[in-house]
Image (cartoon, rainbow over all chains, first blue to last red; front, side, top):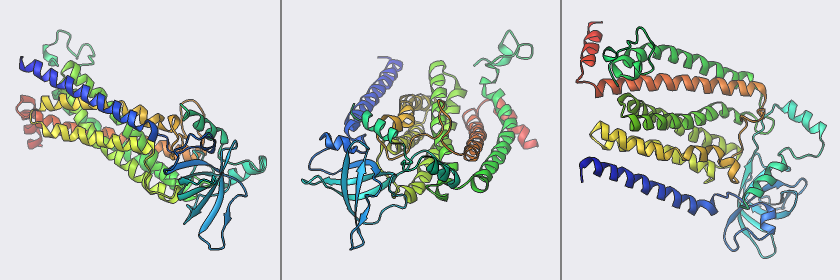
Amino acid sequence: MKPRHKKFAAIAAGVAGLGLAVGLVLTAFQQNLVFFFSPSQVAAKEAPVGRSFRIGGLVESGSVKREPDGVTVHFVVTDTAHRLPVEFRGPLPDLFKEGKGVVAQGKLTESGLFMATEVLAKHDENYMPPEAAEALKNAKPKQPQQSTATLAASGKETGR
Amino acid sequence: MQSPAGRPDSPRTRFSWTYFASPATFYPLAGKMIPWFAAAAALLCAAGIYVGLLVAPTDATQGDSYRIIFIHVGAAWMSMFLYVVMAFWSAVGLAWNTRLASMMASALAPTGALFTFLALWTGALWGKPTWGTWWVWDARLTSELILLFLYIGFMALQAAIDDPRRADRAGAVLAIVGVINVPIIYFSVQWWNTLHQGSSISMTRAPSMATTMVVGMLLVALGFWMYSIAAVLSRARSIMLERERRTDWVTSEVKKQAAA
C-alpha cells in the first residue's frame, strides 16, 4: 500500500465514521428533538407515561388562579382543540401571561392534572411597538396574540 | 496556481480569475482592502446600534429586553454563513489542492467561532428575562452549540497536525462533513417543536417586526459582515507570511516593510 493510498483510506474511514456518528446521533435524538407535546398529543396518549416531559401551548384566558398560599398557581394550557390543567409551585417568568405561549416541564398525574416543576414562557417572532399591539388588540378583541395556527402546525409536524 | 509571469495570456492584457489565487499577488491586494472593510464595519455597526438602541421602539411584549436581538441575530447569521464559506474554501482546497483556498478556510474558523459564541451568549442573556431560563436543550440551541464544537474541532485538528498540507486536508474533511449542521440549525424551528421562536425575517414573507427594528438589525448584520471580511483577510495575511516564509515574495515583502 502506497502512503498516498493509506492517507486516502484514513480520510475515507474518517468520513464514514463521522457520517455514521451523525446518523446515530440524529436517530437517537428523534424522540428528544420534540421539545414539547401539545395538549392534543397528550389527549391522544402520545406523551410518555410515568416520566417527566414538557407540554406547550397557550395559557387559556381567565384560567390562571393563584392559591392563598401565594406560591401555587393553577392554569390551563390549550392548543384550542384540547385543554390540560396544570399546577405549579414557584416563580413564573415575566412573560407568562394569559393568551400567550408557555412550555412547562413535569409529570401527568392519574387524574389528568399536569404537575409542573418548571414553567418557561414561549414568545413568538413578532416584535412591535406597544401602540401597534394596542391597535391590533382593539381591531380583533379577545384574540390571543400568538397565532394558534403556528402552534397547531408545529403540533401536527411532531406527529411524523 | 501558476505564477502570472508563466501564463501565455498575461493578466495585464486579459483579466484572469486565478491571478489573485496566488498568495504573492493576494497578499498586497488584501492589505489594501482591509482598512476599507474595517471602516465600513465600524460605521455600519455604530449606525445599527444607534438605530437599535435609540430609534427603534420598545416591544409590546418584551419591553426593552428584546433589544439584544440587534447583536444576537446578526451574530447567529454570521456564525452559519461563515461556516458555509469555510466549507466552500475547504472543498476548493481539497479538490484543486490550492494553497490559498485552504489558508482562507483556516483564517475563517476563529471569526466563525467568535460569532457562534456571541450568538449563544447573547441568546442566554435574552432567554433568562424572557423565557425564564439561560439554556434549554431544544433543537435550535443544541445545533448551534454543535456548530461551536465544529469550529473548535476544526481549529484543534489543524493545530494538532504539524504538516500544514495534511492539516488542511484533515480540517477540510471535518468542515465539509459538518456543513450538514447548518440547514439543521436554520430549519430546526420549523421542523421541530422548539422553545426558540421562529424566524422574523425570511425570504418568502414580509418581516414580522417594525421597520426600524429591521433596519437596525440589518445594519448591524452588514457591519458584522464587513468586520468578518476585514478580520479574516488580516488573519489570512499572517497565515500566508508564516506558511510561505521560505519563498522569495515573502523575503522581498519583509524587506519592503522593514525599509518603510
